[in-house]
Every structure is written in C-alpha cells, then in structure tokens.
Amino acid sequence: MSCSYAEGLSKYENKGKLGLPERFDPSDEVERKVQILAQWMRESRHTVIHTGAGISTAAGIPDFRGPNGVWTLEKEGLKPEVNISWDDARPTLTHMAIVSLEQRGYVQYVVTQNIDGLHLRSGLQRKKLAELHGDMFVDKCNLCQRQFVRSSAATTVGQKSEGKACPARRGNGRRCRGKLHDNILDWEDGLPDADLDLAISHACVADLSLCLGTTLQIVPSGNIPVDTKKRGGRLVICNLQPTKQDRHADLIINTYVDDLMKRLLELLGVPLMAYTPEDDPLKITQLLLQGSKVIGRSDEDAFEPIEWTIPEEWVKDRDLAERVKSRKVIRKRPGVKEEVIERKKVKNSQIPVAEEGMEDGKMEEQVGLYHRNGEVVTNEEEEEED
Image (cartoon, rainbow, N blue to C red):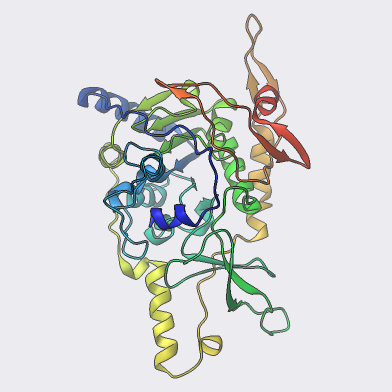
C-alpha cells in the first residue's frame, strides 16, 4: 500500500509541492489534443512513455501529491480512505494500453518512478522497462546484484536484508553466497545504474516522450523526458496537476490517463489487451513456489524464481549507443541561429530532492544538490550545460 511504503521511508521534509488543484480540459479540447498525439505517435520512430503514481490510482493505489495524495493528507494528519494492498492491485487500463501499444510497435521503451510492480504484472518485458525507484515485487542480491521476482510484496523498503539466500548459481554451479534485499529506494539511495542509463539513452534517441500521471518534481527522473525535447523530439504531458516541465511541453493534456489511453488506442486502431493472471510474473512465481512445496522438496532445491536482472549487453548495446551519439543537443539562443552541441550524459548517484515552487502551472526551480561523475553539482548547472 502507498501508506505502508511512505511510512517505511526515512524522514524527509521536502516532498515537493503538494495538493495543487486539478485541471480538466473540455471534452472537445481533449479530443483535439488526443488526435494530435495519435498523429505524432504514427510519425515517431522511437517513443518513450514516462509514468508516475497517477496511472495507478484507478487500481486503488493513492498517489502522493494529488489533492487526496498520501503526502498531501499526511500534512493534515490523515490517510487516504482508499488504499488497496499491493498484492490485490491489478494493472489498470493505462498499464494494459501501454503493453498493447508496445506490442504493436508504437512504444519502444517505458520509464517509471512507480514501485507498485504493475508494469511488471501487466506483462511488459524487462527489456522494455526501466524501474528507477525499485519494485515491491522484486528482490536483489547484495553480492551478485541479480534480481528476482517475488511471490508477494516486500514488507520492507530501503534495500534492507530479508535474510534469505540468493537463489542464483555461480559459474561453477554452486549457489551464490549473497542475501536477498528489497530493491525499493529510500530518499537518498542511489538509483540503479542500468535502469538509469537505459532511461536516459532511450529518452535521448526518442522522437516522442509521453509523460503520464506524474508532476515530474523528482530529479533525475523528472528531468529525463526533457532529454527528448533538447534533441529535437516532442514532449507530451498528460496530468491533472501542473508539472515542473510544462514549459518544455509541446502538448499538455489535462484529463484522466485512462480516458486518454482508451481514446488513443481507438484512434490508432490498437485493441486493448486484457490483464491475464497466466502472464503475470507474480502469479507465475506463486504457482512455481506452490509446485515446489507439493513435491516435498525445499525451496532451495526446487524453486527457481523468474529473473528480473538487466543484462550488461542491454546497457552496452552498440546500436543504441550510436543513436545516442548521433542525437545532438539543440541549443537556441536569443538572436542566434540554433546551435548543435555534443550531448553530455548525466549520471546521478542519488535519489534526488523534490523540487518546490510550482504555483498556478509555473515552476520556480529550487537549486538541489546531487552527485554527477564524482562531483557535487546543482540542477541549475546541469540546465546551463544542456
């Protein structure tokens, strides 16, 4: 549950701008904008979708900064009235629409800040997904760093040890000697390198980045969609509240994400895939675990969990690297023709501070500190470089 996750995090005062009023475009305006989005998706050779907590509210999981969000209500000493358990939640229409679009070739990659595991459970392939803040349904070994799908949601956050032995085997066939930990980031934990690298790379080569259900207040995840815009691509945002990156967007759609995605599928002629437990890695893991117990063997001997590790070859994909290299940052200065400069890849080793200052659709950016290539820099300095 969102509340249990929030309560498990360390104390952190700066959670961003909370409880901003929601906005709704008129129905005819939504239709006009979705038609534009559909055309841009047809034209795009590489589309990346960035998702936040807003795509999971329809599953009964509260968001964090909305009018009834976990942290919004927390300031008043309250908790959300609706708060389904992680295990009982199911992928929403938006989760399944994303899978449907990916299967038809309209979406090439998904970057999520969500830890609810609903992208995993929707059937989206690991090769198509970067989970920047972790996943409630994934364990990680502290020694070999491999990741495995769990049979139920983790009961801890902050990458704590569960005391369970890693099920991986080494090259000599022997068991890894590491211990499994949850892989949910706390506020100041480092983002997973492989997920972050791939998220940045795909955003840089994208012709279109579509942000769904996020105010983009957390860096670096909230800055990644702008990599697309800086390199000549388009940026579309669908959210009910203003976001930090509204000023960069080519199109802003203020409507429910499920309504947007339903209409988008219709315009593109893509059938909506249904959620099926048979394709849910969580349900598959539960069946595998039950089967190992039925035959009377120990988990260590019989149970082999589904692996969720990003292989090194995906991160070092030569084709992707060449495409990143070919996409230059386009800098436009007053009174000067557009200038093309080399891209500088940003590596952030900390989950960042939430940025304050969003008021009436505008953001006054707070200078936040984080690490980049061993140096402590500010997000203002990064803005100047890019």
